[in-house]
Image (cartoon, rainbow, N blue to C red; front, top):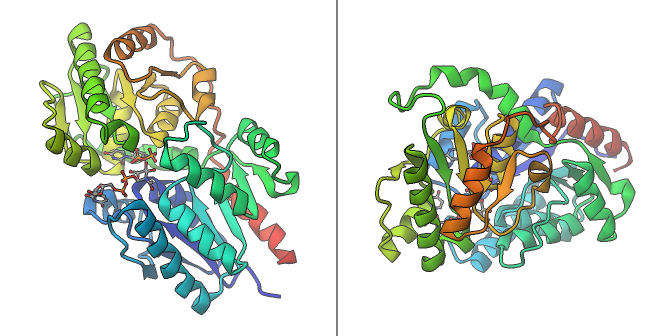
Length: 363
Ligand code: UD1
Ligand code: UDP
């Protein structure tokens, strides 16, 4: 029998995976288990990748697939074939993936084909929007995983409804809470934009493929942000994702007075979130962080796979018309910040590693 102490493979590829996997890596280090990191290279720009390794003091990946930016099929295929080679050589006891990116699906498929156990962290999220590439990544990864770490009871229910066996599913909270709690203390050392006082600006983030690859939709959302800024007389700061920057150039979208800046490092972005009057976003992780940090959120989409944030009163799904963005922002501006974070107490990584270690006796 192979001991888990020998090898846990941790797979990452994009900004949110690095941030949400960091607490898992920290816990594995604390327990002294042997592990290594595989990086797909889906994200490779310094400010989407290396900066998080530096800031979160993570060890360098043992393997980098360097897949880079490709069409979705080619990118996923390169991740499958690249990770298969690593698995042939290393044969890990378990591979852990986090979230819903092409990296997650590619690694999970390669592991499945070799019968290597897969742990899916953040399992059971569904937007029920089939236009989102992430929705298929979530469904396919959940259905080929051996251990499904659902952040909430609601996500466990979704998995059970889809016929996944109860014994594979564990409600553990979301490691984003661990990450926020572990890193919040560093935030006060970061003052990137000193002119922005607490509660005197809006923070925006917008990068979903279905939003920014569609010129009408991208333009309409930006118009919505401009209306919000005018109505409340507050600036909007938008650290722009490279996909959105590329598309804005291509479509000739004008941002007007919206303050466009480079993608931020994690501590600086947490600092901005904490100090924003309200956050407007189409990001998954940012919806969660806004809820955890008690900042009202408007989700610039037609659906969310994080309905818990809406149920507790921290978030509203605005749709993508400029008028509904303004209307929903108005509503969230009235909200008292009294909700309870539904994603756990910051001990998700501990729970996940405990479960994996316990179950591995039977591997
Ligand atoms: C990916 C994920 C998305 C996640 C996001 C996190 C999928 C299908 N999408 O979207 O779920 O929310 O990461 O940020 O897996 N680019 C760079 N530098 C980089 C990486 C990308 O400039 O380091 C540019 C390239 O022009 C590239 C574009 O961004 O074509 C999109 O990158 P890609 O990784 O395909 O998708 P994301 O939009 O980042
Ligand atoms: N983030 C960051 N800098 C930024 C924007 C976001 O560090 O300029 C962090 C944010 O705090 C969150 C994560 O990146 O933890 C969210 O990633 P993203 O929005 O790219 O992906 P998603 O969560 O939508 O998959």
